[in-house]
Length: 604
Image (cartoon, rainbow, N blue to C red):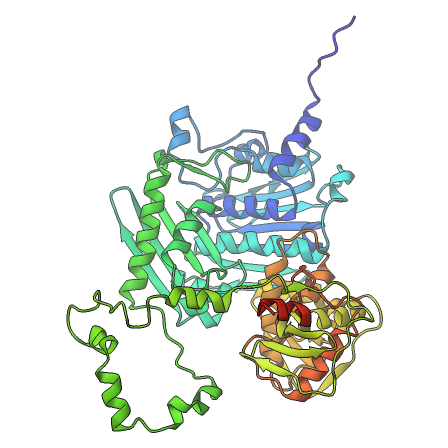
């Protein structure tokens, strides 16, 4: 038999290797921006067309390259950063493997102009599918301009896997923000299809954070400054009130390189323990500066995952640094002193605390236990508190076989609409039936009603829009503006009328009929946050995520006092749904107590 193993042609080998580095336009943005920073640029401009599919261009005022270096920079593993194996463990630049330009040239058409300050003329190079088509002297500004055109023109199968322009733009914005946050002393700008998206003047880190993440953070940042022999930790974390239900404002940098680390994120979350809800995420932008010998950044093609030689030390230092910063600024949990209006009607509030009652209270052993020194551990066995845990558990347990989710309500179940429904603890509704009663969870029931109404609108007739008498404008961060533009058609279908109004701004012309007038801005901001909460769930379509976001946002929450009319309307709407007994996530909307089961509970 003849030999069957052979070497791949260079252009095919380059395309295969490029797939590890250049996965989408945002990958090229990352590599080109990092190259500009490594070149010592103080001004970097990013130009995008067609979400990077047609053009990604980076123009910098860095040191530029000679003609020979310009040509060599497109060879695979051509690098100015590595001379021997020891250099690999002292890397402080962004790029070092010499793969970026070679990979870009393998899957696109590239034009390069570059010039050093000491040269009279610069160098112009055209490359197509890894082949140099033209190299000649040219007039050019000091620095480098590199344009990547027609990404994946020679690998159409991979081009077909790119997402929508809005989705690809979100990835580009993310990569731009990573580099811009790491180098606040550098001017950055970004334009997309001729429209400016970012214009970031040089400044300090706090100014850059506010520029990118929004002005609400301006007065809500806590400085982190910890210096040890092993590493330095600097940056900012958000005060607890800035925590959100969604990820997105969390950034970690090691030696100015953006990284992802679930391990370090866990350390930061632990530092916020008892300060924020368990399902909330704090904002942080933290920089770790340490000897490169302690880390390995060459473990992933994008260099966003790294290894530390001692992860336990990193975890301890990070958690301690954030805790120290929060404590230094006297940030502690706050108590909510807002009373339920019904509390004011209780006998204990309304009736006078007479002298007899005062004497009775102060003479009790329980009073002395908590008012005299060194008595807290001497609780009287006869004080009535002996079995308090049992008492609380008895009141909170599901308690009986009679409490069970009802399957699809059939003709056998009839609601007594002639009686008033009763609201319990501003969370549940007691509904009499012909065979007992239902305990309805008001929020979960409303979620089912909203979901069926919004799902029908999303896939059929659009919801009615209530036009605003006085349209308002809302400003978004650039990343959120990209998201809103992507969602505009779906928002219109669900009753929101938004129109672009300048850079990163929109005019709200109308909202769904059940959105309170004057509250449009807050409603849309909360809707965006809720939508981002679902973005990591790939089993839902974009429209389904939006519907679920609106359901979560608009549903009646626990603590909302309902009138008799509102309770009747909610229960009527629930039993008009195609599915009545469960939410979209499978939780029961109500529990049924039957007469015979109640009787058995009392041993009758």
